[in-house]
Image: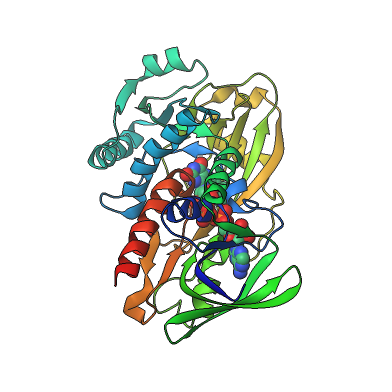
Length: 371
Ligand SMILES: Cc1cc2nc3c(=O)[nH]c(=O)nc-3n(C[C@H](O)[C@H](O)[C@H](O)COP(=O)(O)OP(=O)(O)OC[C@H]3O[C@@H](n4cnc5c(N)ncnc54)[C@H](O)[C@@H]3O)c2cc1C
C-alpha cells in the first residue's frame, strides 16, 4: 500500500471505536498498531468502569464525552449481548468535612446531565453494603462495569465489516507533511514502509505526544507533553466485601483507591497514583497503603488477604501537583496541519468515552473533507 485515505495510529479502544465509526461512510480506512494484537496497552490495564460523569467540570470534553459514552456503551452492550453490569456506585464521605466534597460532586454531576444521583445517609448505606461504614454517600446508579476486551472485539468486528483494515506489528516512527498529504513511515513486520495519506488520526495513547512531536508540533509550547502516571491494583481474596463500586472522595490526581468488583464478582482495590518515567506493568506498591486507605470506609478489609494483581499507566497531561486537564481532541489546522486529528491525554474516563470520542472524531473528519 502506498496511498491511503485515512490512517488511525493506535488500536486501543479509542482507535477501534473511531475506525468503526469513520468506516461506516468512508473507504480506505487503515489502523496501524505496533503490537501483535489490538488493545494490549492502557485499554487492557484499567478498572473496567463505565463512569457516570460526576468528576469532570461542566462543558469539559471529559464531562460531555463521558456522559454520552456512558449511554452509548450500555446501548452497544445491550444490543450485541456484550457482558456488562450496571452495579451502581457509592462515593463516600467518611468524615463530616468530606460531605462538602460530595455536594460538589453532586452539583457537578447534575450540571453534566448525570441522572438518578442521590445522597444516602449512614443507615441506608449500611443496608446496601453492610461492610461500608461512612457518614454519607453519593449514589450514582448509572455507573457500572464492562469487559473492555469484549467491547474492543465488537468495534474491531464493526470496523472490519465496514472494510477498515487493521495492520498489526506496524509501528509508526516518522510523520511529515508533504504538500497536502502526510507521509507516514515506520516498520511493518520488521520491513520499512512509507505511505501517503490525506488524514491522520493520532490515537497512540501513551505515545500520542511523540506522534505529534514527529510532525513538528512543539508539545511543550502547546501543553501536549504526557506524563506517565501509574496505578497498581490488589485483589481481595475470598468472599467479596462489597457488591457495588465504592469510592472515597477524590484527592490528588486520581479518584482515590476504590473497590471495584469485576464481572465474576471478584473485588479489586486500586488504583493508587504515582508518576513514573517508563512503562512497566509490575505492581510496585506495598499492600499497606491500600489497606490503610480502604480501612477508613471498609474496616473489615483488615480481615482479608490482598494479593498484587496488575497495574495500568495513565497518559496524563497533568503533571504532579497540577490542576485539571481536559482531553485534547482537535484538528490541528490552526497549526498548519489540516487533517491531522490529534488525541492527547486520553486517560480516564477514556474507556467510557470511547464511542462518543469516535463520533466526535468522525464529525471533525467530515468537516475536514467538506473543506
Ligand atoms: C489505571 C487506570 C484505570 C483506568 N480506569 C478507567 C475506568 O475505569 N473507566 C474509564 O472510562 N477509563 C479508565 N481508564 C482510562 C482508559 O483505560 C483509557 O482512557 C483508554 O483505554 C485509552 O484508550 P486508547 O485507545 O486511547 O489508548 P491505548 O489503549 O493505550 O491504545 C493506544 C494504542 O496505540 C498504539 N501505539 C502507540 N504508539 C504507536 C506507534 N508509534 N505506532 C503504532 N501504534 C502505536 C499502542 O500500541 C496502543 O495499542 C483507566 C486508565 C488507567 C491507566
